[in-house]
Length: 260
Image (cartoon, rainbow, N blue to C red; front, top):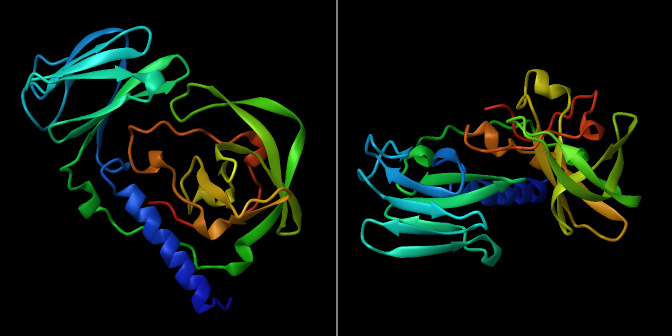
């Protein structure tokens, strides 16, 4: 398969952006942990007496008080009080070298902490790829569903969640008519969670992600050369959705990132 310099350059630019996001301070490589939290007060730090124990940092980083209405306050040892309010988009903050955030999964809340001084990004091994194949940059038909629906998806940790779905992407591959449902993302960049037979040996076992590009009223580009490992391939502290049954394919899509 001949790959033009322009196609190679476009892929290299995409991958540079991909790696910048993955290795950023708020990326997936420097997560120290995810702790389920409920309303109340928790101490956070390296000390043995802390409710949330960190492997690095001060003995006591601070205390988090979470309320049942998704508000709260973090009081650092420097005396600064940071007000938290999910509705106002203020559920993430910084303390010392750490980035903290409270994430939501249905009615559950979890505290996720990143170490901005982590060396994980520098120590990361290169990601292997299948050879580039321009034929696997596919323009799919982008069709609205007869009726929007709420789809129940399982997650890697076994907690199901619901997502709204309004469209389906249809395309031909290996002589088959294929259809994929988008389950996350945005209108101009829908995200597809899928699994194919490469998951048996070459790609992450549970799922891969690919994003729709150049979305119009009736078409969307699916570039499987840009299919990626999900966050949970890089860290045990991510919660990834599993593919809906519509996105399980009995063929090998040999494109994109290989298993780490």
